Figure 1 (spheres, rainbow, N blue to C red):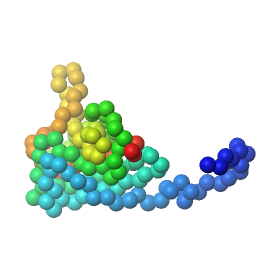
Figure 2 (tube, rainbow, N blue to C red):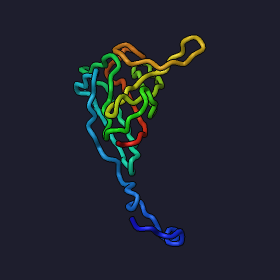
Figure 3 (tube, one colour):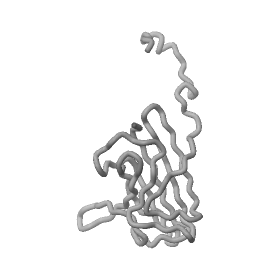
Length: 153
């Protein structure tokens, strides 16, 4: 590793190409407890050093099935985090109403995320796993949007 002085850094112009801030890459996430059928899935990520930013949207089709606590695979394996560490946010849209339910993404192991939704129980806000009927009954046109950031292994 070459050491450079503060003066050399101050006089250097850093471009987007130097930082690899170009276009995000496509990836095909793996799913568990979710049958995608002909759903429209858009998944992008950008890795800068060991930091990974990702987003994935899933617009359900008539033959898509949301199971109990589905998971979405990450584009790059993560370091080991404590169980249920939040790494992002999730939005669940019921196209028939229309309405949006907010949630979060927690990490599961080093290769998958678990989208959960927020609900109010008494005076507490809890997060709960998805199912075929939670946070609403899933149908054609409904979507799941997740975005987050984590440290790559």
